[in-house]
Image (cartoon, rainbow, N blue to C red; front, side, top):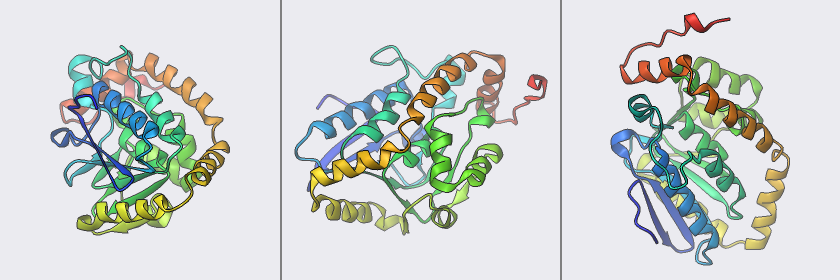
Length: 263
């Protein structure tokens, strides 16, 4: 294992636990965080000691608050990366393509890009205090690929549009009733429940699980092309005054004023 600063990785009883470890930033991700997450998922993919992967966040406030908007407002980017590019789209593909079930243990707020990460996982277990939602239109960003189109497959068109257009968080019981998560547990039992589910899965045929995951994904893999288009568009949009207004307003803790950008 290489040295990690933003993420922790541990394996026991056939399960890899990948933890976003930036609790002071609500486990939001910068470029380095994404690089380390990709590295951990690749490590788990290649390891014969791993049959199931759990993705979670450090602390009890946040699973992941999405991209580090403060860093984006301060520096104009999400910081330096190993390959010189911000690889969030590659991380999305990694979660879908790794031939092992991925369980999101949502230990707090899952918002924006962090919400997309849990949606992409095969299963989601939420702590009772967890909250869910999108924030892109408030901070000058969007995910017009898996984060919206696949979300609509999971919870339906109307509810997906509600999350994106209103940018209001929903609580864990509502997420359960919408089919956005599989189970809600007390916070103290979240990781143990995720490990119990992983143990049950690890007792099953890994080859059968691999084929099942690919089969489940096949129906929506065409969204990968839409995702490429969306992230190319986001790269262009991120350099505009409109996107900058969203990030700056977030950093200044004020409401953004997008009125001058209407057409």
